[in-house]
Length: 209
Image (cartoon, rainbow, N blue to C red):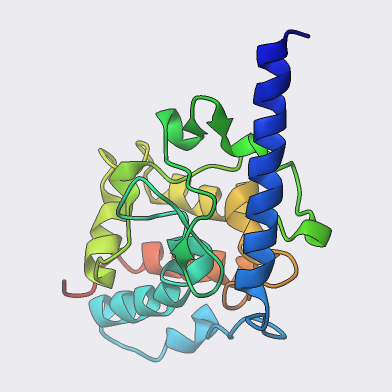
């Protein structure tokens, strides 16, 4: 191994160790015993007006969409956020190509295939930021809703594909199993999927922006 490669590897390890220490400090005292609850999709059936029911369902989904577990990876800038307090990611990292970090400091440099709780580092097999076209930070629920439905921005997904994405993608599912020191997203993945299905079935209406 060349001297340059050794130096680069050592620098990457130092970045990860520094980031782990900062993450532990940020998460200290923030963890909650569990995420908030979600109303079951069936509880909205009493709303007679279909559009009103659809909007109400999306508002309930918004508890997850605007939670730190989702918002941290849907930032308005090129830099992700972390922890329940949604502080800017430390050490400094940026989106880079395809959301996997800049050359020389990809997400996988520090984030493994699963959570590493001893160091407070979250993980998943394809850890990455959401596409810039799906930045939710600073948006209203109505604007987020329109983004989700826009196939020019959401990865060419129709509502059926969106439901499959949120119920099967491991990185989305990580939000309900984020590891020690992080509050899980509200409810369960199954409950969220049921809400999205009911929202789609009722016309996929969006709240006012």
